[in-house]
Length: 288
Image (cartoon, rainbow, N blue to C red; front, side, top):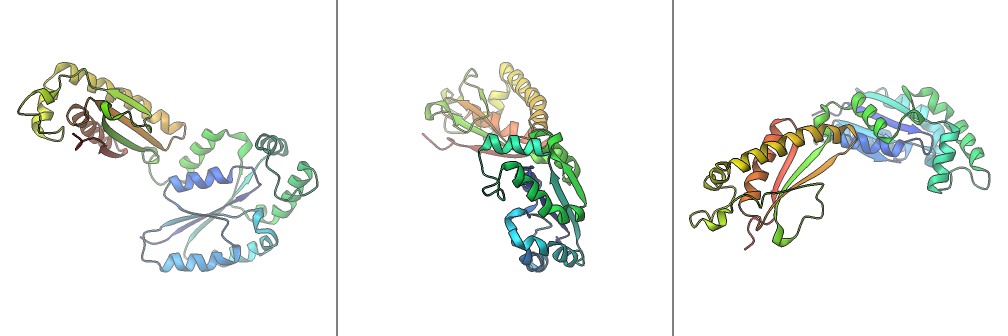
Protein backbone atom coordinates (compact mmCIF):
# COMPACT_ATOMS: atom_id res chain seq x y z
CA UNK A 1 0.00 0.00 0.00
CA UNK A 2 1.26 3.45 -0.86
CA UNK A 3 1.79 6.16 1.76
CA UNK A 4 -0.82 8.73 0.75
CA UNK A 5 -2.00 10.77 3.73
CA UNK A 6 -0.32 13.00 6.31
CA UNK A 7 -2.14 14.72 9.15
CA UNK A 8 -0.24 17.32 11.16
CA UNK A 9 -1.70 17.87 14.64
CA UNK A 10 -0.80 21.18 16.22
CA UNK A 11 -2.26 23.87 18.44
CA UNK A 12 -2.31 25.20 21.97
CA UNK A 13 -0.84 23.31 24.90
CA UNK A 14 -3.68 21.63 26.79
CA UNK A 15 -6.07 21.79 23.83
CA UNK A 16 -6.36 18.04 23.23
CA UNK A 17 -3.47 17.21 20.88
CA UNK A 18 -2.39 14.15 22.86
CA UNK A 19 -5.93 12.77 22.85
CA UNK A 20 -6.12 13.45 19.11
CA UNK A 21 -2.84 11.60 18.51
CA UNK A 22 -4.17 8.60 20.44
CA UNK A 23 -7.36 8.67 18.37
CA UNK A 24 -5.43 8.73 15.09
CA UNK A 25 -3.29 5.84 16.30
CA UNK A 26 -6.46 3.88 17.11
CA UNK A 27 -7.63 4.63 13.57
CA UNK A 28 -4.53 2.97 12.15
CA UNK A 29 -2.32 6.00 11.59
CA UNK A 30 1.41 5.76 12.24
CA UNK A 31 1.87 8.49 14.87
CA UNK A 32 4.99 10.44 15.80
CA UNK A 33 5.01 13.02 18.59
CA UNK A 34 7.38 15.99 18.47
CA UNK A 35 9.40 15.00 15.40
CA UNK A 36 11.83 17.88 14.74
CA UNK A 37 10.36 20.06 12.00
CA UNK A 38 13.50 19.97 9.86
CA UNK A 39 13.33 16.16 9.82
CA UNK A 40 9.79 15.98 8.47
CA UNK A 41 10.78 15.96 4.75
CA UNK A 42 13.40 13.28 5.46
CA UNK A 43 10.84 11.23 7.38
CA UNK A 44 8.29 11.50 4.57
CA UNK A 45 10.88 10.45 2.01
CA UNK A 46 11.82 7.38 4.08
CA UNK A 47 8.19 6.35 4.57
CA UNK A 48 7.43 6.87 0.87
CA UNK A 49 10.29 4.59 -0.18
CA UNK A 50 9.63 2.01 2.52
CA UNK A 51 8.28 -1.37 1.38
CA UNK A 52 6.07 -1.51 4.49
CA UNK A 53 2.31 -1.01 4.75
CA UNK A 54 2.23 2.50 6.30
CA UNK A 55 -0.43 4.44 4.41
CA UNK A 56 -1.39 7.18 6.86
CA UNK A 57 0.80 9.19 9.22
CA UNK A 58 -0.07 11.69 11.95
CA UNK A 59 2.59 14.06 13.33
CA UNK A 60 2.28 16.21 16.45
CA UNK A 61 4.01 19.59 16.15
CA UNK A 62 3.75 22.13 18.95
CA UNK A 63 5.44 24.77 21.07
CA UNK A 64 8.13 22.30 22.18
CA UNK A 65 9.85 22.99 18.86
CA UNK A 66 10.84 26.39 20.20
CA UNK A 67 12.59 28.65 17.72
CA UNK A 68 12.33 25.98 14.99
CA UNK A 69 8.60 26.69 14.70
CA UNK A 70 9.43 29.60 12.43
CA UNK A 71 10.56 27.04 9.83
CA UNK A 72 7.16 25.37 9.70
CA UNK A 73 5.59 27.38 6.83
CA UNK A 74 8.61 26.66 4.60
CA UNK A 75 8.61 22.96 5.51
CA UNK A 76 4.85 22.74 4.93
CA UNK A 77 5.29 24.16 1.42
CA UNK A 78 7.91 21.47 0.72
CA UNK A 79 5.62 18.74 2.01
CA UNK A 80 2.70 19.83 -0.16
CA UNK A 81 4.82 19.29 -3.28
CA UNK A 82 4.73 15.54 -2.63
CA UNK A 83 2.09 13.29 -4.15
CA UNK A 84 0.43 13.24 -0.78
CA UNK A 85 -2.77 14.38 0.88
CA UNK A 86 -1.73 16.78 3.66
CA UNK A 87 -3.96 18.29 6.31
CA UNK A 88 -2.97 20.57 9.19
CA UNK A 89 -5.34 20.46 12.16
CA UNK A 90 -5.00 23.24 14.72
CA UNK A 91 -6.52 22.66 18.15
CA UNK A 92 -7.78 25.88 19.69
CA UNK A 93 -9.25 26.38 23.18
CA UNK A 94 -10.47 29.35 25.15
CA UNK A 95 -8.11 30.94 27.63
CA UNK A 96 -10.56 30.21 30.47
CA UNK A 97 -10.60 26.50 29.58
CA UNK A 98 -6.80 26.33 29.38
CA UNK A 99 -6.41 28.05 32.75
CA UNK A 100 -8.79 25.53 34.30
CA UNK A 101 -7.03 22.54 32.71
CA UNK A 102 -3.55 23.66 33.77
CA UNK A 103 -4.82 24.45 37.26
CA UNK A 104 -6.38 20.97 37.54
CA UNK A 105 -3.26 19.14 36.35
CA UNK A 106 -0.87 21.49 38.21
CA UNK A 107 1.54 21.32 35.29
CA UNK A 108 3.55 24.41 34.34
CA UNK A 109 2.77 26.07 31.05
CA UNK A 110 5.67 25.41 28.63
CA UNK A 111 6.28 29.09 27.81
CA UNK A 112 5.04 30.88 30.94
CA UNK A 113 8.37 30.83 32.76
CA UNK A 114 8.20 33.23 35.68
CA UNK A 115 5.16 34.98 34.20
CA UNK A 116 1.54 34.18 34.98
CA UNK A 117 -0.30 31.28 33.39
CA UNK A 118 -2.51 33.68 31.43
CA UNK A 119 0.55 35.51 30.10
CA UNK A 120 2.07 32.20 29.02
CA UNK A 121 -1.10 31.24 27.15
CA UNK A 122 -1.20 34.59 25.38
CA UNK A 123 2.48 34.31 24.42
CA UNK A 124 1.89 30.84 23.00
CA UNK A 125 -1.02 32.14 20.92
CA UNK A 126 1.21 34.77 19.36
CA UNK A 127 3.98 32.27 18.60
CA UNK A 128 1.54 29.82 17.00
CA UNK A 129 -0.41 32.43 15.04
CA UNK A 130 1.47 31.85 11.73
CA UNK A 131 0.80 28.12 12.01
CA UNK A 132 -2.85 28.69 12.85
CA UNK A 133 -3.20 30.83 9.74
CA UNK A 134 -1.88 27.94 7.61
CA UNK A 135 -4.16 25.31 9.17
CA UNK A 136 -6.69 23.48 7.01
CA UNK A 137 -9.02 22.92 9.96
CA UNK A 138 -9.32 24.65 13.34
CA UNK A 139 -11.00 22.62 16.06
CA UNK A 140 -12.33 24.50 19.09
CA UNK A 141 -11.87 21.68 21.60
CA UNK A 142 -13.45 23.48 24.55
CA UNK A 143 -16.78 22.74 22.86
CA UNK A 144 -16.22 18.98 23.35
CA UNK A 145 -15.79 16.66 26.27
CA UNK A 146 -13.27 13.83 25.90
CA UNK A 147 -15.77 11.35 24.47
CA UNK A 148 -17.31 13.87 22.09
CA UNK A 149 -13.89 14.82 20.72
CA UNK A 150 -13.03 11.16 20.08
CA UNK A 151 -16.35 10.68 18.32
CA UNK A 152 -15.80 13.80 16.19
CA UNK A 153 -12.34 12.65 15.11
CA UNK A 154 -13.44 9.10 14.33
CA UNK A 155 -16.45 10.35 12.35
CA UNK A 156 -14.32 12.74 10.29
CA UNK A 157 -11.03 10.89 9.83
CA UNK A 158 -11.54 7.15 10.16
CA UNK A 159 -11.67 5.12 6.96
CA UNK A 160 -13.07 2.13 8.84
CA UNK A 161 -16.58 1.94 10.23
CA UNK A 162 -16.94 2.53 13.93
CA UNK A 163 -16.96 -1.21 14.72
CA UNK A 164 -13.27 -1.28 13.83
CA UNK A 165 -12.36 1.26 16.51
CA UNK A 166 -12.85 -1.34 19.28
CA UNK A 167 -10.75 -4.47 19.78
CA UNK A 168 -12.55 -7.26 21.63
CA UNK A 169 -10.67 -9.96 23.52
CA UNK A 170 -12.74 -13.02 24.46
CA UNK A 171 -11.04 -15.17 27.12
CA UNK A 172 -12.09 -18.53 28.54
CA UNK A 173 -10.74 -19.45 31.97
CA UNK A 174 -11.13 -21.80 34.94
CA UNK A 175 -12.32 -20.34 38.25
CA UNK A 176 -10.03 -22.67 40.16
CA UNK A 177 -7.07 -20.82 38.61
CA UNK A 178 -8.45 -17.37 39.41
CA UNK A 179 -10.45 -14.73 37.57
CA UNK A 180 -8.48 -12.85 34.85
CA UNK A 181 -7.66 -9.45 36.35
CA UNK A 182 -8.15 -7.72 32.98
CA UNK A 183 -11.85 -8.67 32.81
CA UNK A 184 -14.29 -5.94 31.75
CA UNK A 185 -17.27 -8.27 31.46
CA UNK A 186 -17.49 -11.64 33.21
CA UNK A 187 -19.89 -14.50 32.51
CA UNK A 188 -20.16 -17.76 34.49
CA UNK A 189 -21.18 -21.07 32.85
CA UNK A 190 -20.68 -23.33 35.88
CA UNK A 191 -24.46 -23.90 36.05
CA UNK A 192 -24.19 -26.00 32.87
CA UNK A 193 -23.66 -29.77 33.43
CA UNK A 194 -19.93 -30.44 33.30
CA UNK A 195 -18.61 -32.59 30.40
CA UNK A 196 -15.71 -33.49 32.68
CA UNK A 197 -17.97 -36.06 34.31
CA UNK A 198 -18.77 -37.75 31.01
CA UNK A 199 -16.06 -40.36 30.46
CA UNK A 200 -16.01 -39.99 26.66
CA UNK A 201 -15.72 -36.17 26.90
CA UNK A 202 -13.29 -35.78 29.81
CA UNK A 203 -10.11 -35.93 27.67
CA UNK A 204 -11.57 -33.59 25.07
CA UNK A 205 -11.95 -29.80 25.17
CA UNK A 206 -14.53 -27.19 24.23
CA UNK A 207 -12.83 -26.97 20.82
CA UNK A 208 -13.94 -30.51 19.99
CA UNK A 209 -17.25 -31.01 18.18
CA UNK A 210 -18.42 -33.63 20.68
CA UNK A 211 -18.15 -31.20 23.61
CA UNK A 212 -19.79 -28.40 21.62
CA UNK A 213 -22.70 -30.69 20.71
CA UNK A 214 -23.05 -31.74 24.37
CA UNK A 215 -23.35 -28.21 25.77
CA UNK A 216 -25.49 -26.90 22.90
CA UNK A 217 -27.98 -29.71 23.48
CA UNK A 218 -28.74 -28.16 26.90
CA UNK A 219 -31.69 -25.75 26.71
CA UNK A 220 -30.49 -23.59 29.62
CA UNK A 221 -27.12 -23.14 27.90
CA UNK A 222 -28.72 -22.14 24.60
CA UNK A 223 -30.94 -19.57 26.29
CA UNK A 224 -28.01 -18.22 28.34
CA UNK A 225 -25.83 -17.85 25.26
CA UNK A 226 -28.54 -15.95 23.38
CA UNK A 227 -29.10 -13.60 26.32
CA UNK A 228 -25.35 -12.92 26.69
CA UNK A 229 -24.95 -12.32 22.96
CA UNK A 230 -27.96 -9.98 22.88
CA UNK A 231 -26.51 -8.06 25.84
CA UNK A 232 -23.19 -7.65 24.02
CA UNK A 233 -24.94 -6.45 20.86
CA UNK A 234 -26.53 -3.78 23.05
CA UNK A 235 -23.40 -2.85 25.03
CA UNK A 236 -20.59 -2.88 22.48
CA UNK A 237 -21.87 -0.02 20.25
CA UNK A 238 -22.32 2.07 23.37
CA UNK A 239 -18.77 1.30 24.53
CA UNK A 240 -17.57 2.46 21.11
CA UNK A 241 -19.64 5.64 21.36
CA UNK A 242 -18.00 6.40 24.71
CA UNK A 243 -14.54 5.99 23.18
CA UNK A 244 -13.56 2.60 24.58
CA UNK A 245 -10.95 0.95 22.34
CA UNK A 246 -10.33 -2.36 24.13
CA UNK A 247 -12.88 -4.70 25.72
CA UNK A 248 -12.10 -7.97 27.51
CA UNK A 249 -14.96 -10.46 27.84
CA UNK A 250 -14.21 -13.42 30.11
CA UNK A 251 -16.15 -16.69 30.21
CA UNK A 252 -15.50 -18.96 33.19
CA UNK A 253 -16.21 -22.54 34.18
CA UNK A 254 -14.59 -24.74 36.83
CA UNK A 255 -11.44 -25.88 35.04
CA UNK A 256 -11.43 -23.77 31.88
CA UNK A 257 -11.36 -26.76 29.47
CA UNK A 258 -14.90 -27.54 28.34
CA UNK A 259 -17.91 -25.26 28.89
CA UNK A 260 -16.16 -21.89 28.96
CA UNK A 261 -14.02 -22.81 25.96
CA UNK A 262 -17.04 -23.81 23.87
CA UNK A 263 -18.94 -20.66 24.73
CA UNK A 264 -15.99 -18.29 24.31
CA UNK A 265 -15.12 -19.78 20.93
CA UNK A 266 -18.66 -19.38 19.57
CA UNK A 267 -19.05 -15.93 21.12
CA UNK A 268 -15.87 -14.74 19.43
CA UNK A 269 -16.94 -16.15 16.08
CA UNK A 270 -20.41 -14.58 16.29
CA UNK A 271 -19.02 -11.17 17.29
CA UNK A 272 -16.56 -11.33 14.38
CA UNK A 273 -19.49 -11.95 12.03
CA UNK A 274 -20.95 -8.67 13.28
CA UNK A 275 -17.85 -6.89 11.95
CA UNK A 276 -15.94 -6.48 15.21
CA UNK A 277 -12.22 -7.11 15.59
CA UNK A 278 -12.03 -10.11 17.91
CA UNK A 279 -9.32 -12.33 19.34
CA UNK A 280 -10.31 -15.44 21.30
CA UNK A 281 -7.91 -17.09 23.73
CA UNK A 282 -8.29 -20.02 26.12
CA UNK A 283 -6.15 -19.27 29.14
CA UNK A 284 -6.44 -22.57 31.00
CA UNK A 285 -7.18 -24.99 28.18
CA UNK A 286 -4.17 -27.26 28.74
CA UNK A 287 -3.95 -27.02 32.51
CA UNK A 288 -4.72 -30.13 34.56
